[in-house]
Length: 81
Image (cartoon, rainbow, N blue to C red; front, side, top):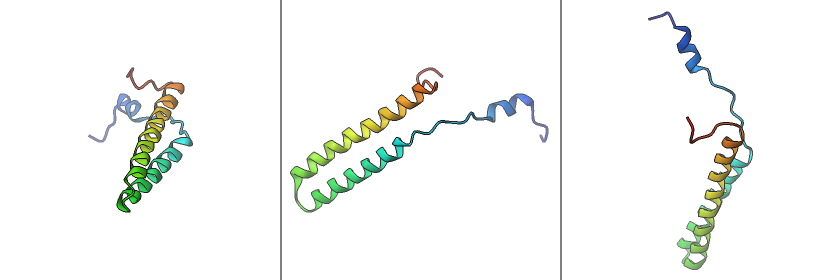
């Protein structure tokens, strides 16, 4: 059990991933818009809350598109594994 096969070591070696600095920014923007929307709903301004919830969906979609685009650009095609 203490002997490790050479093939097993190759499985656990990860290649260095490229991190996009805009993804955490998108996550913070999503959290900020969500918080502002919830606060506006709480205060009774439902029209502003609806607009902010729609903005949250747009920002969240852009963040996900940025993550997928970055992975595809650097060679990690998420649909071909």
